[in-house]
Amino acid sequence: MKQYKIAVIAGDGIGPEVIDEGIKVLKQVAELDSGFQFNFTYFPWGCEFYTKNGTMMDDDGIEQLKEYDAIYLGAVGFPGVPDHISLWDLLLRIRKGFDQYVNIRPVKLLKGAHLPLVDVRREDIDMLFIRENSEGEYSGAGDWLFKDQEHEVVLQNSVFSRKGTERIIRYAFERAKKDGKSLTSISKANALNYSMVFWDQVFEEVSAEYPEVETASYLVDAAAMLMIKDPKRFEVVVTSNLFGDILTDLGAALAGGIGLAAGANINPERDFPSMFEPIHGSAPDIAGQQISNPLAAIWSASQMLDFFGYETYGKLVLDAVEQLLVEEKVLTPDMNGNSSTSDVGNRVVELINSLV
Ligand code: ATP
Ligand code: MG
Image (tube, rainbow, N blue to C red):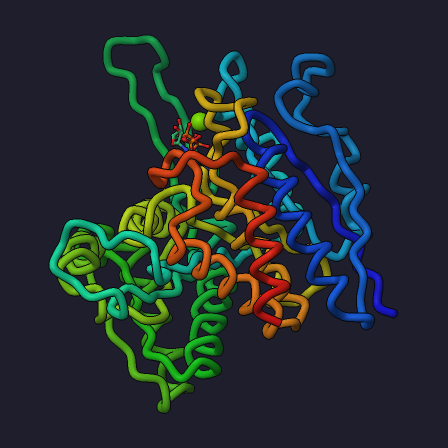
């Protein structure tokens, strides 16, 4: 029997509550198949760990995580610890340390999830965002010149390498080809006259290798408008780190809200573990009350199943989530329900069993 070793970093705030429900779902799926099993190892990393140890994770954390098949992350960040520390000292260390250069975020309005207040049909909101996750605007390079002087100047550099740009665009073409979908590139070459001109050029070059994939290219400002006004234009979408960050939050609002949005940080070569997480944060305002919505964490568990090659089970989990949304009986307060976090997880498990 295949054993998958999953490193669980439940993290802060609502992280542990939503991760508990995702793990319930993964355990249930493993019960249905005698071919594989999950072994979960918990790591106590996050802001509480930081308060005691002055670091978000063990110094050799990356070394420790290396031997796992995947990482399942709740959320990190809590009042009292600056956001840039929780981000750089844990999340970005893992993303960069394991070269998880692909960030995959579905923007799909499930059956039962509420339509946003725009004139579109449910079927029109079904996109797959592929965001560059290792460099670009989030390279971390920059300088602070003449600090605290009258004429201070701050530089924040974007880094677009040939390797980094080509591999994300190629990944997106492969995905579009596999799914039989079109591919849209989003950039801003009129204003960013080096980085985005280069991005567009690489997109065009790689595009020549995939004549079977229909392509489109938009400026990011136009794309933001069209995602709302005419979302059916977008199927698979490839974009840079910053643009992907912003547009997928817009996507989350289109596709039923932050309580539903999931994301995967993928190392396609599989020489390191990939990481699966809900895209929401630790939501300290509602932590510890069992009212957080676990569906984003459950959707990211479904992405993990897809990644391991169990796409049928990944779909089964999403079907169960859709069924739950259509029933409108067991929902958390953010979706106008009055059920608890674990009620929702338990109901998803029941629905999985009734659907197999
Ligand atoms: P980050 O800095 O990590 O992006 P944030 O503090 O900007 O996070 P979140 O923590 O994602 O934002 O949450 C913003 C608000 O959305 C929360 O205060 C909470 O009210 C709500 N929220 C987020 N996630 C959930 C969830 N899973 N269920 C219910 N409400 C949520
Ligand atoms: Mg926050």
